[in-house]
Image (cartoon, rainbow, N blue to C red):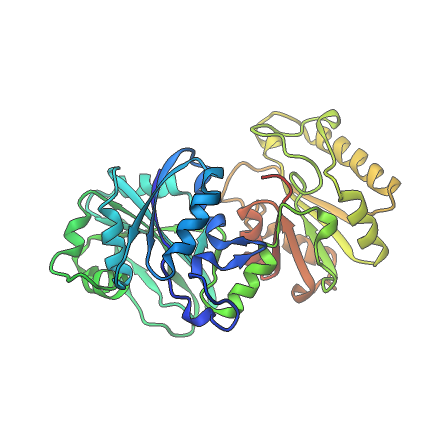
Length: 394
């Protein structure tokens, strides 16, 4: 995987809450936002990361020098001596690219796209010089909308206006080695959005792939504060989370209550290991009268690796242990389907909808989803509730 990260944003709209750093270095949960972008890329293994830097570039370079080795990347810097705009910054960074396709990420946006799938989608449409990851949104006015025609070709970019439902440009692109054609006739400084995408949309060169992954843009103070809530739980214990304002807690299971089994499933009780802080948290929240629900995908059943009876026995013994330590879980919902299209499977909302039927008094504004994956955060967004990303292990 080769990626460009646009890391030179001025962060003008964030000055009231963050100052003296580029947007990508805005602190979230005790780490710069850039850390979360690199963590997203890390799942694809070793790679080449090109950081397009300008404003306060030394802050970014110094952090990479000190902390970059925790990720399996080779780093390059494309340094703007004068501001080049988003398009000029991308073109400068791509001069250091080595691979046939390069992914581009905005330094202030976390969009959990299947990047390998995005590259494969791009390769499957050779008529497109660039492919955008698109996010479906509801009830929004902050973003312009994107329209697609046949063959997933983008046909229009619409101005910002209130929209009940539509697709937006998620700020993640893949460009191939023919990308120079997109920049023909442009000067040194230009906008990717206005001077490339908007002006060339009628030529059939721009494709789009829809992703339902977790999306977070920290470009304005309101969403930056949301990031502080949703990402603050990374590498914390469950018992440390600030959830006082919430009446209903929805918890993922694996990675939240019990330790994940990498590349495997918990198929019997002997493989179930409670994480530190779980008993304390559940006892405290139960004593405060909170409703605690577990919502968990269990593909091991759908794959035939275990049975519903196996899962029932695991959950019986799990609940017994929790009760023995003074805690209580009101109900467990699970989806065994292996189909990503199943509405009951997270990030589909089926389990939440069932919970609302079972507990009609549930109010979205007093709910929070605590999970360890971007799918859990996308589930929270789709349900219209808050989410907290909790990762107890790096």
